[in-house]
Length: 163
Image (tube, rainbow, N blue to C red):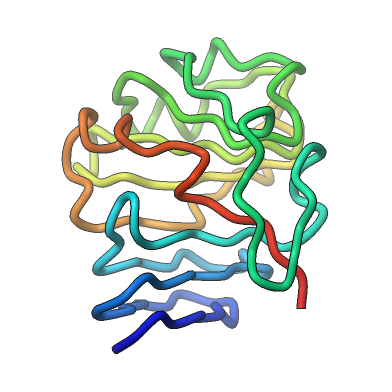
């Protein structure tokens, strides 16, 4: 109940930070975690160093570079190789089928999307978006229950860190 740093340990976890400005840090995306109380503009979602090309990770968690955050795409199909090694925020909702089955030529890309099937904000990742074999949902962000709320997020809601 303060400004906490919470590490995910892999698997399917339900994570709550309670009060304060919390950092939810991930380096093992082997499951689907659920954040129960993420507050836009206050809390941060952390990616381990090496996830992005333009952010200089720090132990405190460096704010994700705006060059590593793409927020002008409308759908999964509009991702290209230019979005590789980035966090992409979709401006429109996408269905579970669109997220799971649309292929593009992006690689090592995280997708922040409002899933119209689940009614939740989610983060998906794939090392190779040209196929669907490695694609997985890694995070559900409860409380962000509209596209408008999701597109209220920005690069400042994310950090890149190292131990």
